[in-house]
Amino acid sequence: MTAGVHDATAAEPATETEGIGLPSVDVHVDACTTTNGEHVSNNLVVTSGEREDRRAVSEAVTEASIGSQVVTMLGKPLRYGRNQIDSSLKTLGRFFDLAAQSFAYLITDLIRLRHPWRDTINQAWFIISVTAIPALLVSIPFGVIVAVQVGNFISQVGASSVSGAAGGLGVIRQGAPVVAALLLGGAAGSAVATDLGARTIREEVDALRVMGINPVQRLVTPRLAAIVIVAPVLCSFIIFMGLAAGYAINVGFQSGTPGSYIASFASFASVSDVGVAVLKTWLFGVVVILVACQRGLEAKGGARGVADAVNASVVIGVVAVFVLNLLITQGLSMSMPLRVG
Image 1 (tube, rainbow, N blue to C red):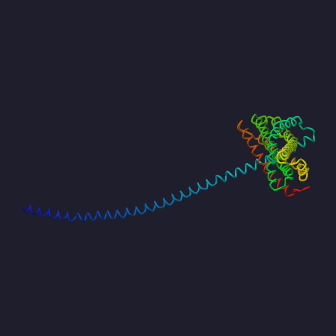
Image 2 (cartoon, one colour; image 1 turned 90 degrees about the vertical axis):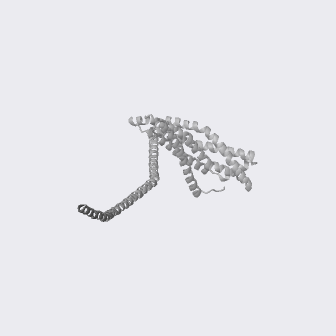
Image 3 (cartoon, one colour; image 1 turned 90 degrees about the horizontal axis):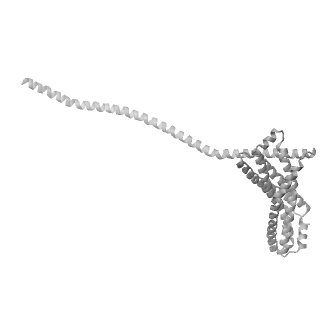
């Protein structure tokens, strides 16, 4: 019994101790948990700081990448424009170089009596054959349109006596040079660019250089001389047909008289107007033929390259003609104003 009581008594404190010790263990665990929690919280604070730093760095990198992309996107048009301007200036420089060489060889060959006249005559006949009929078909409608529009306006203001002068001056000063230049650039220029472009892609031009023959002297100079010969003839033909069409419309359909038409035309127009028109046609013809020769000699890439050369020669020649016509017209209007009588 004593042993049992003793055992029971011993067991009871043990149980109490265990019961008492459990809270201490819990407290210790809580403390440990709290301590671990503090460490964990400290670790969490450190981790969140690192995350903030990394987030800031990533945001900065993202902003930098976006900024670089924006700069790249904005820089592409600028680089494209700069490259186009640079290419245009180089092309313009090559054009002036070709023009200088062509005129130098032309003058030198004429002085030395070594100019290839047979090629020049053949090229001149070719240009006439491809531009004569289009010039006829364009000059007559142009003269009719000018006569109709000018005649209607002048009849409304009561100045029918000067309808011949107005229509004639329009044909001489603006119509004939521009129409001649368009025909030379569209018909003759495209044909020249096709011929030289085909020679270039067949390596005939390179063969001439290998044989010691300058392609500019052999191919460009005869065509330049031909355009110088044909341009004034074509301009004079267009002037004649335009004035004839205007005369027919004025006398036949607008109740005009032949005497008043011719008298008003003689009062306003002069020989200097015809001379200026011929000089403008010369300049326009030289520009379009040199542009066609340059594009033909620089053609590359097979048949497609020849087509691109022809297209570029026509477009550039027409644009150059209109720009030059604007500059020349403005200069002449300031230096040579219109005089009556």
